[in-house]
Amino acid sequence: MSAFSEPAQRHAILPLLAAGLLLAATTAGAQETKSQLKGLQLSNDQPIQIQSDKLEIQQQSNTAQFTGNVKVVQGTTTLQAGSMVVHYTAQGGGSISSGDADIEKIEVADKVFLQSGTQEATADTGTFNLIDEVFVLKGDKVVLSEGKNVFVGCQLTVLMRTGEAKLDACGGRVMIQLDPKSRKTAN
Image (cartoon, rainbow, N blue to C red; front, side, top):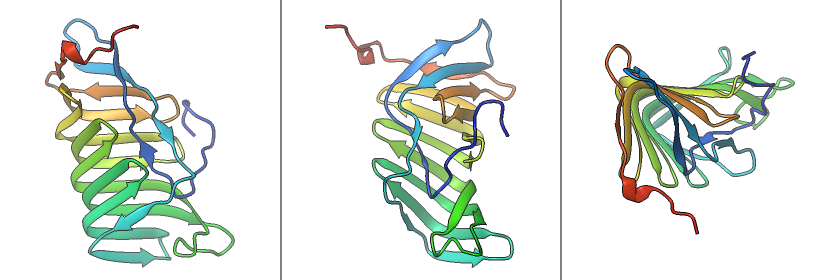
């Protein structure tokens, strides 16, 4: 159990990135950036559509492996990757194919693309831990963008319950490009 959260609902849900990057803190010479992803939430009430070239369900290991052009759509969120492995716990002898399973973790790899609303993120791999409500995108170059605002590092960690995000540089430096015209003005 993570120090960040209480047990989460884990039925067929995907994290949703929503609008609103607010830079919360950076330190001089920092190698990480923290921000708030407003509206980040877990969605348990919208249908999920998954497409792939191949699906293999392994009951023994409680996994479902999607390979080849994986595309997951839920509401306004789209996730694409070369492969996706869903780890689950079957309820009362049920299975993931019958809908009687709790998803614990989703792993994606091979050119990960995540889009929700006006935000997009790209990475080499990603892990969505639905028990701890944390998702991590990793790669040589992890890019998070909203319009002309761009954040680049090697690892993006998001606490789904709070929307708190941290971008690490992994020995290099975090790069940020902010467009002053994107700032909202008060009425």
